[in-house]
Length: 277
Image (tube, rainbow, N blue to C red; front, side):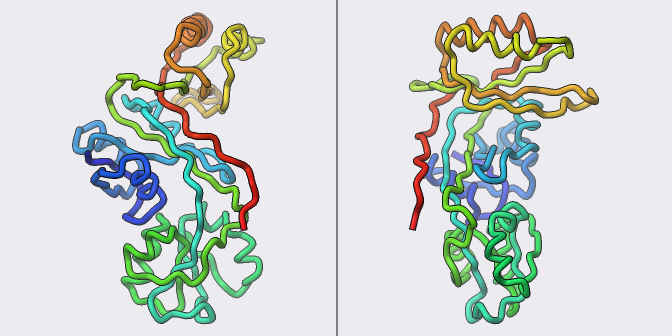
């Protein structure tokens, strides 16, 4: 199976794909939209995308793409994010004046930069891509923040491991493709819906789930493109394709301007909140 990811070989999406689909052929894409385009065209059979991080929050662009494109969620994974300082061979920590990485990765290592005010954080389009850049260019004053896998991929050397501020740092990844077939063991549903701006309408919309004892694990609003000051609600239900969920969605359809089921899939194993060494 050919699977698209946003980013280069060795990035966190590559790692997540290896855990979800160990035999997949990974197809790196420079932009997220390119991954969705490849799924749509059939040049890949699926894509693995990050949808939210436990510290940085949601990936807004991916919510918009899930709404706009004809794709379906078939699985999810919670990946523990470990940031490593990686330099070209022969470069010591005392030589590093610049550190390249994705802006979110840089933001998750604030304490590291606070303790080293002489080092400049340089935003780059991808974590693994930043390692490839500093190694291929032979930069003697630079390093990158990325997964350990990127060091192996591009011949870098890990100077410091685990430099993220918070050890409870996870990213939730989704597996998507064009098939709307619901797999066995599916116990979670992701939907999107829009409402008219009238009093009490959100209360009524959420009541369709409360009346049926359906738990919601997430609710978030995003601007509705082409409709200023109107919003789409993205909701995750802790139910699969059973009669209670189907009844709730039918009821919601009577209230909402539209309802789109984004996926019905097995929920990821819960993350254990505990301190790590």
